[in-house]
Image (cartoon, rainbow, N blue to C red; front, top):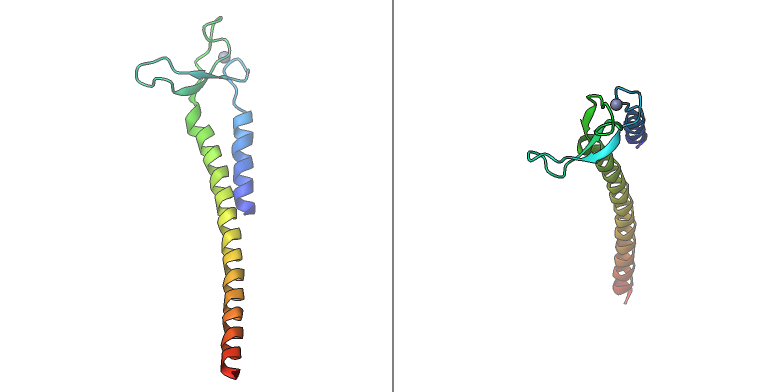
Length: 107
Ligand SMILES: [Zn+2]
């Protein structure tokens, strides 16, 4: 679990350090091209405003990755919890069964 947490925070800090050629934080844009319609990418803040630099990075590659990682970690925690509860219920069921069996034998 600690391993997963450290991995997720490493991804987050990497996204923070994302800077374009101007040293500015890039902004999320939507691709207007036919090849990738509606696809999101990080682009230079000054793109189409003044001289933009060549900064370009698909957003779904890393953002999706981080979200998936978080989701997977959350689901894993859920499964672990459910498994623990299942064991508890199973144990109780067995005890109950043994109790009734011992009672049935006495009568
Ligand atoms: Zn720039």
